[in-house]
Image 1 (cartoon, rainbow, N blue to C red):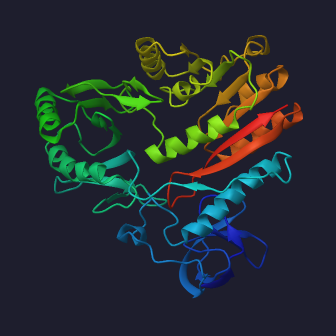
Image 2: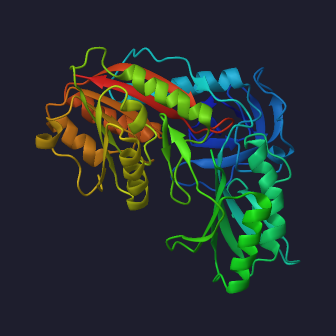
Length: 423
């Protein structure tokens, strides 16, 4: 065991120390300022990894984890041992550092908006059949393919967690789950919406089982897919709906939602605050990577919105909702990697709002940089991609007008950010 002094916190939620030979070492379970005993493992990518075996000098910010699964290595949380105030400050610094790497020094970053416990309305859960035929449902253990069967959870909404316990009984009898699969559960306004992915075919007996479960468990829709195939509706007892910006949307199975209502509200509010104070009388707003309209419909209160989304299912749901609500939203299906909006198209808009996936929006930002567009609001879920894309905007003459970190994945290293840019 080696004695290590933890100098900081890595982006994945591990403490960072330096070995005597200068090699950085990422230590799971360690906090900044602590001295820990750890056994460094093999080096990967020029760094080594370790787990804190003994806390020799604890940080004053160390707290008792509220969930027993944390000590078992549940991958749902990484930072339950760290005081929430310290976590919020660290996440604020992560946004500040990302903007600094892009060349924006001394940016005024707002305080981190932190969502409450027991608020996650979306869960992507792993399924694993045990030798005795029972089914484990939960998150993978950190750094492992093993599924930790959830007995309690401090991040999911109670209604969602209660459903998990009931699903165990159903899935035990489902032959379509031979060894492993997944369950994506979204808690919509209409109730829980379930997408099952399994490793075997769904036969007639399985369909009858899911139809009965939909009625008994109050699940308006259960969709099923084998592996990565497109889903089909296996059972439906009623309509599914979610209200976004006052507009009712029928999301497709497994649709991406912001993780919590509180997180969604914080992001929407930050986006609206980041819009320029002075807009034309009839502003044209471009919502890129629009999903099912999480930002499109709130933005429609400020101007006419063109919403572009690459997923056919999400774009169809957004378009149907907009047409039904007669909202000021035009929905387009468009792959923004292969077909980003070009400068000639961007000149028709006053503001572009981007909410790209984890990899960022390199292709689209490159076109924005070449355009005459003057205002951009960027919603990020990855500080590294944000730093890269923000550097491109800076080189094109943009400055930062607003920066807000949002911690909607409580006790994780994950960070959402909303950043306004203007030329």
